[in-house]
Every structure is written in C-alpha cells, then in structure tokens.
Image (tube, rainbow, N blue to C red; front, side, top):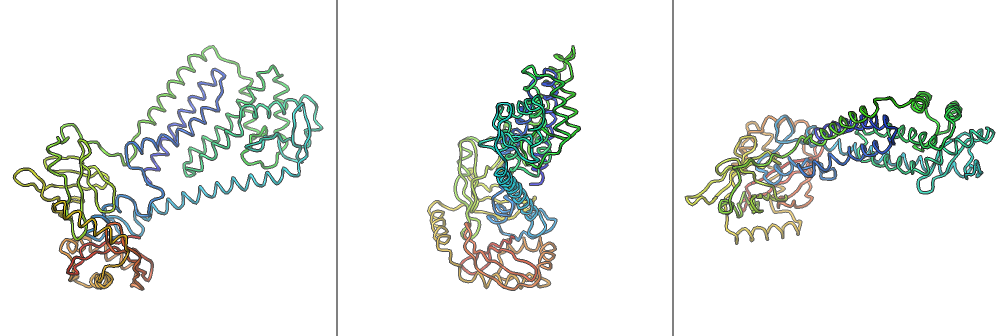
Length: 518
C-alpha cells in the first residue's frame, strides 16, 4: 500500500506542475484560474483510482487487515505456516500486513478528524451568526459582526458578513467590499471551495493535494478581483480598499471565501491587477499550455507499482488447449482449485477467493501475477492436465490432483454445509494445541502433520521460532468459526499478543493445512 500511496503522490505532484503551467498560460491571457486548480484536485483523485482499477488490483481499504496477496496465498493454499520475518511469505507482526493495517487505520482516523473539524467549524460559525445583526449595505443584505469579515459564510444559503468597522467607512469602500463578496456569491465560490475541501477528506495524507487547495483559494480571490474590475471600477480605489481590509485582522471563519488575506498575498493580487499584457503573451500562453498538457499526459501514463503484465502475443491458448485444463483439482481434504475458461483466458479459483487469471508462461506453465505464484501442469499422453503443481518463490509448495465433477460437487456441498453450520470439526483444537507443543520442540518431530505442511514448517523454522518467542506462552485457545475454505478458525491469546489460526484435518486426524494471521 505504501508503494501505491507514493505513486498517488507522484501523480499529484505532476498534475500540480501541469496546473501551475496552465495557470501561467491563463495569466498571460487574463483568463479565470480557479477551474484549473479545481480540475487538478479532481484529476489527482480520479486518475490514480481509474488507472489502478482498470490496470491493477487496487488496495482495498475496507478489506480485512491482512493484505490481499498474503491472504489469498496463505489462507487458500495454506500448506505452510506464513510467520513474520524477512521471508516473502508474509507478515503477522511488524510486517507488510501490520504495516498496511496501521496505514489504513491512520488514513481513516485522519479523514474522520478532518470531517469532524469541518463540522465543528461550521457549528461554531452558525452559533456566532446568531449574534450578528442584519443590515443593508450598498444595496445588499449583509450580516454585521464585531470583528469578522468581509467574507461569505454558509454553503446552502451563503450570506455576506462584514465587520462593524466597515459600517463607518466611506461609501466607496463599502461598495467595493460588497461588490467583491457579491462576485464570490455569483460565481458560487463558497460551494466550489467547500467541495474541494470535502474531496481532500478522501486522501488527507496527500500533501500535494493540500497545496492544490491552497492554490485554488488564491485563484478564487484573483478571479474575483478580475470580475470586480471588469465593471469599470477604479483600480486605485479597489487596491486601497484591499489594503484597508488587510490591515484589520478578521475573526476565524474556517474555509470561507474571504476578502482579507495575508499581506504578502494582497501585494501579489495588486501586482497582478497592475500588470499589463506583454507583446509576447500569446506565444508564451501557447507554450505554457503545451507544457501543461505534456506534464498532465506524463502523469496519466505513470503505471501503478502493482500493475499486472498482460500475456505477450504467442502465449495465448486456443480453445482446445484451454479445454485440457478445465476442471476441479483437489489440494487436500476439502480444498479444491477450480479452473474455468473465460474466452481465451484460464481462471483459477482458490478456496474462498474469486477467480484469478492464469497467464500462460510456457509449455504447461502458468503464472498468477496477483499472487506472485506459478503453476506447472502435469499432463497425460493426450495433453490433458492430471494435476497442478503450485510454486511460490520458486519452491514447490503443493500438488492438486484432478478429480471428476461428481466428487467435486460432493466436496463443495459438504464444504457449504460445514461453513453454514459453523461448528468445529472434532479434534481440531487438540491438534492445534499439539502443534503448538511440537513447534517448541528442538528438534521438531511434527508427528500427525501432513508431509507437505511439515516440509513447509521446517523451511520456515527460523522465522517461525522468532515470531513465537515474541508472542510468548499460549494463554487460551477459542473456536470462533469456520472459514470459507472449510478450515476451523481459532483465536489464540498469547502472553504478549493474539493471533488467528486456521487448521484443517483429514479423515485420520492428520493436520493438512495450518495458517496463522493477526
């Protein structure tokens, strides 16, 4: 997920650069700027989402804490124990899964905090409005506050609020202030600013997005100045009014469109109003516009870090070849791999998971990029697959043998009943406790453990022992349900933490699969 977030930030930075160039191009032609930054904010959210959803598997923010790559491989094809550590098998504590879970929680907390802040800010302004008096100024209905404004407050029914000192100012200043705020109302600037801020709630960690909001606020004010001066108002009087407003500090109004800004920005606004068009402005505007479009195109072309490679030409399978692989393959116990066809594609469905494409990688060789897993098919003399051998990180992990359709349906029906009943299989708790004891032995005997699972445990022994030492002694084992792949789920409380274990047995009580996660 961290890589995906870095990708999003990179795209946002490029789009910010494109918007900055476009703003300079528009400045040469004295056009409106605010829509450029509004579009940049929307594009910064939309482009990474669309590109990811079309090309890759986007991180699911609301999925269970274990990342999808680890869950699919370790739960549905779990003839091994994926303990924490540097091994690519996955993470339980302090690894990729925990890291992703922490990021998701922090993301949600930040979004909730910003949303709560906006609601509180709005409530404070609403409460303050009750103490402001209504009045008319330069032909407009306004609210007069002791030390707040000039600004426009409110989203659904925005109102102009002016400070009390403005009621004592001369009529020219009053007229220009009201003209400025009325221009905000006519252009729906308060609504635009509020929508932009609400969009930022979706990605509060994206700092370039906040800079875009900052630029949008400034563009709104510059555009408003241009609209006011468009009606032949005196530039000197308007500049003097801006300075007069800027010298008096306004009360806090959150994100309201306000006439008063920092002294440095007021100076910039006046310089923009005073600047005269240069002779070469058309050529400069065209050049900047082209650079802006080029930068935006580069941003759209950046691929997410987990983009899936499509199979190259020459690796596609014909209908006859696809038919050689279709069917059900029994992994162990009630675990099946179902291979189906979708046009010219082969799809493998592992227990408890949706179909994933099997990308041809050679003669009877396939990869599943989403899992970083490869599959080798064992074929008979007619080229029909009789078994599938699954490889992870180049090692043979398990073999799934073809079974007929009747047996496959029988297994699926039995699995569906077991999942519906949510009753523990007799002996799984005893087997799990025995497994805990064996994992602490030196050397490990692993009696009552299937050979493939035992081999996987021994391969991961150093990582496993380090993880178990951190958790400490087992305090309790509690059955909490049956997983979608038919394994019994247990919540295990340790001296220094908790973990969920999934375990399944064969008819003789031998442990076939074991999986541990947060």
